[in-house]
Image 1 (spheres, rainbow, N blue to C red):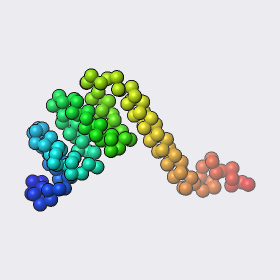
Image 2 (image 1 turned 120 degrees about the horizontal axis):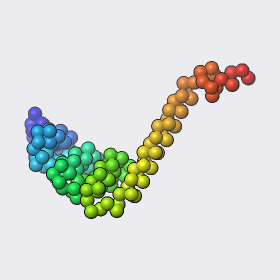
Image 3 (image 1 turned 90 degrees about the vertical axis):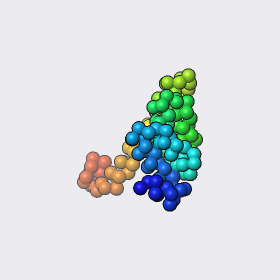
Image 4 (image 1 turned 45 degrees about the vertical axis):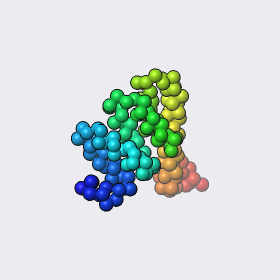
Length: 146
């Protein structure tokens, strides 16, 4: 089915991703890698970070740590706040000769996660403020008597 879709829409990157995932699940990493590399998903649609992430995993499982790290770095070039790619890069660097880069990347990841947590808390506070009436929370209960 996916092969037929690719024949009809050869420039649709997501079809290559789907087929590559199926190949990976079947254990055919050579065909999976082929679908995630040129001229398939990653080159047709550079915004498909998932293709690079899966490709990085395939390289890592095949012992190609340097190529796996390069895929994560490519994701980070297009989205410097991509936490999953940053995390995977840190894991891959542990298995390479580039361990000296890890502390900086770990600090960066922690800062991104903290910012995300702060953003979520702020979002929850705004949501609470919109729902609250004069008697629904301690923040507003003093205003009701005045």
